[in-house]
Image 1 (cartoon, each protein chain N blue to C red):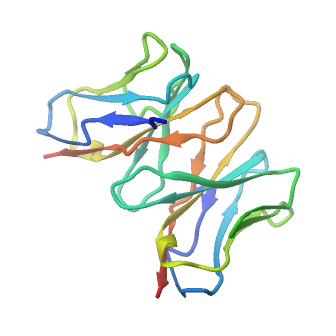
Image 2 (tube, each protein chain N blue to C red):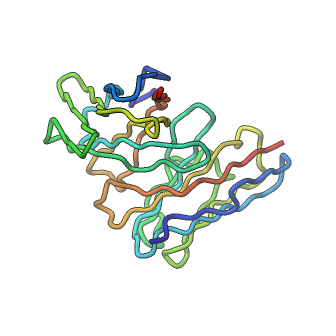
Length: 114
Length: 114
């Protein structure tokens, strides 16, 4: 039972254009969402996050949007750069448990073409 | 500063062997997590430590998996009598405080069981 879903295994965009990566979740107890970026042979690197009390968070070229009613979030990268090419994981966490463990999606491979 | 480090980076074990994977978290980080990432999947939670206390081991797939963090810093994940299905990348992550959602990952240990 996949609680966090990334339905697009891959995405290809041109340098300078916008990249939009999508994520859906099923557990309404999730109250914090994160995006991680992963290069081959490296661990995931934290990119940006959003609390469920917000609907948007922006950090430089990266913006995350949260639509709680649709249980959907998206990561926008503008403008996209070749160095952004990596696997992007969406993750979620639920307050109230003994741990802030993260539940990850399966990832989306982003390729930014020069 | 130094990030999370893991050793060995690669481990090949024959089926039935025991293995031990080491994680050095960021200095001062209270929380430590272990995740397992199978090929083509996102990381999946295994276990969580707050200092030396193992507060959640709900993700450990069988009693062949054991983790410890005796002095609240370095952690070891041990897998006894390895099976082929244990082949995966094992990721360690740490965070500064238990209430922190952002986790910082090490590069992982790729375990291959032959």
